[in-house]
Image (cartoon, rainbow, N blue to C red; front, side, top):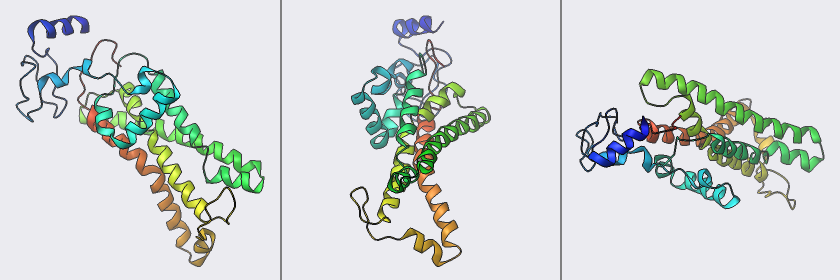
Length: 245
């Protein structure tokens, strides 16, 4: 059915019935592809799902493609999500998510365990990575329910891909937390040692510890949630194509 629609696009140069503008969601079925959306002015042909060719990682599984995707999502997330492909297997997206949370094993708990030679802290770092994976899929579940209420064309499969490619947010957040932790450690070859005593600050007042914990959680969560939000905004009206999820 989708292939017939695509052939119809090429033959008639009009948008198939059911298409919506990717900018505002306005129904554009039957309109000329080179026309502008009556609601927001975006070109009708830009809503063609075949224009979504995916990030570099979706095309090739290599270290360079992974790094290129990570950089693209952190420096130009809107454009990267606007090209996100929803066809075919979700395995590449899931592998990208898994690789990012594995990278988050480098965190304050792991480094503390390595510094004092206590494997329990290193195991705690592994737990932190698992927790990030669990938080990602809890977000997918919550957002999927929200999408039903909002009427956006994002089923659970699409939301999962958006969330998977928001995983660089976990890397950024964990990196910021790790840098802050290193700044408060004694000067050694593996620390920055900038003279910030977080333990001393936490003991200075009863409210400093909880406040620092809240700020730390915000630093960890905000980059991921920010990418997730941008991705949902760019993909909420994406039209469906053959083998779409």
